[in-house]
Length: 263
Image (cartoon, rainbow, N blue to C red; front, side, top):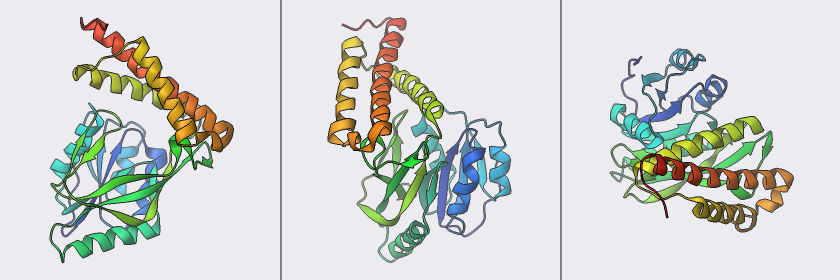
């Protein structure tokens, strides 16, 4: 269902959803007054759509094929001058709301302006992570309309030719609720990634899977100092290694099913 746009909005806050009723309320409240919420929903059945509409969001339905396509679709329906991409399990801090407003207002004086990135603080299993896979990370989320394109089926990334400037404040990322939630998402992501990689003609195989997995564990545990997050950090690093191995093994299976035998 498509809602009626409020005239005069300069910023759309785009959120992709699929059964996110538990997260969406706090997410929407965190940026109230900043801009228009635009929801692209993948067939939610838990009241997500009704909650979003009741909060004044514009809701568009689109079956998820890959995440980049979903985000690019939001650009097609957006009528605002600027877009900010937000996940349903993320929240604005008050400082970030003001920083985005100042960035957009300041850009009016200089023309097109720059894209904006923000430091995201990650929380999982009821604790904050400071190192490893869930260490604080910079994410590029604010763009003038028409100056970004998203690529990648899973863990998609933004492509823009603009200068990217840091924004004040933070995104608070309330990610995995528990281990079942985390491992379930890893399984889903690995299959989606493999399906996209198979379409692109990428290679899989056991040797590649083991090598990539080992490299990822070393990266998260040693280079990103995940060992300092204690047992939780160690377990996350091990799970990320398993996820990496799984996606290349699934890719290998898909390639063989499609008649492409890896060496």
